[in-house]
Amino acid sequence: MGTDSPVLRIIPIGGVGTFGMNSMVVEFGDDLIVVDAGIKIPQGNLPGVDQILPDFSYVIENSQRVKAVFLTHGHDDHIAALPYLIRYLDVPVYGTAFTIALARARIIDNYLNVDQAEPDLVQLLFGSTVKCGPFSVETVRMSHSIPDCAALSITTPLGTVLHTGDFRMETEPLDGYKTDLDRIRELGDSGILVLLADSTSAGKQGFLPAEKEVGKVLEEIIFQAPGRVFIATFASHIHRVQMVLAAAHRLGRKVVMEGRRMVQNCTLAEQLGYLVYPPNTVRQIEDLDEKEKGDVVFLTTGTQGEPLSALSRIVRDEHRKISIAKGDTVIFSSRIIPGNELSVGQIVNELFRRGVVVFTEDSAMVHVSGHSTGEEIKTVIEAARPEYFIPLHGEYPQLTANANLAREAGVGVDNIFILEPGNVLELSAGGAALARPVTAGRLLVDGDTVGDLDDNRRPG
Ligand SMILES: [Zn+2]
Ligand SMILES: [Zn+2]
Image (cartoon, rainbow, N blue to C red; front, side):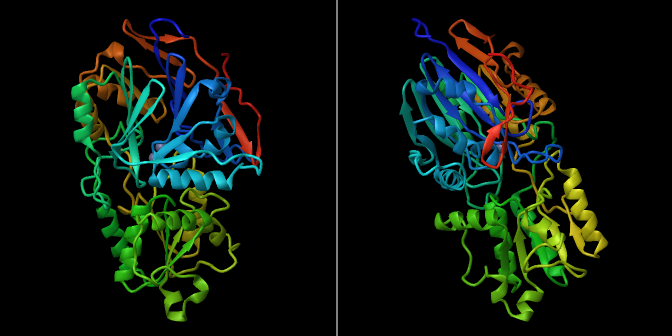
């Protein structure tokens, strides 16, 4: 470090080779920034483990050199490890409005000791640029399954690194904001050294339907339903929630929100003006009369069959106020995250046993992905025209599919790098090469206890 010709180093801490734990270091000379700090939700085979964090040893050991943390968006696989990471850092955390609101809520919920100063959370507008050390970071609007998702254009003295965050190419966004392909093209005109892109659906063909199409299907199911309707969806999918609220209002039904996260996220979205609905649409179950109770729409958490979620507790008859029975309709307006098939399957099985009508992604178009298909990703790569390409956000099949897209879009085959956590890609005027890796792996969290270093830990 500190040599005459500093190098740019890109180090994924997590988020490659697995879904979740998205975090990356961008380093130039002696300075570094962290992009995202996410968790992975543990699956059934790790009882007693609440969360899985990436091993932040490299960031923590170099905390004096860290200039800032930037967040692309507010999904847990991008922000939920932040409450842990910021214990070790005294730097600003930047993100757009909803992202910062969710990050603050997570920090208040987790880990924050009385003697720990509140971190410096800084809200950014789209198109604004933050300068810190040798980095100049611009937020670029991207469409995704949560409001306020940003790509980050990180300019360094060696060149620009564009990190897409998670994105899709929504054609009719509910909030009117499309992925800012024009800005990406402009950045491409000026020259993008490295593009890092979301690989989640890189292997999928064609184009995604508009989110509004899901809204129409949900409204039709609610309209046809003889009784109560339970809609399980991701608590951060504010546009999905918005469509359900509008549909319920049009059909003269009341909505009850169940699940702490659902209530918390919707409250934050409402405060920012991102969730708007007529008064009296959303109610508490105890305030409804018998007619209203009979055709209420519940918006609940529990899309992945999480045992403590509202829907799971209702199905196990462990909910204080709500039970479920024949005549009810349940919609899983969500994707099953790979690994959760068993827990969701058990809930679906129990619902069918009771004579409940069930809709999932397989039986009706009640969900559309927030992640671009291959064809859509290619439009972004072609707009960016990067010299180097790194696929992010996926297991190796998805990363490989994305690498193939980059090759088709004209990126040189030797300039595409499928990385593993802890890999260090060094870029300089002379080219790009892998350097000695840094420590990476997983940390298992049980309640407030962080420990049990995973055997994936590799030497520094
Ligand atoms: Zn993600
Ligand atoms: Zn996301």
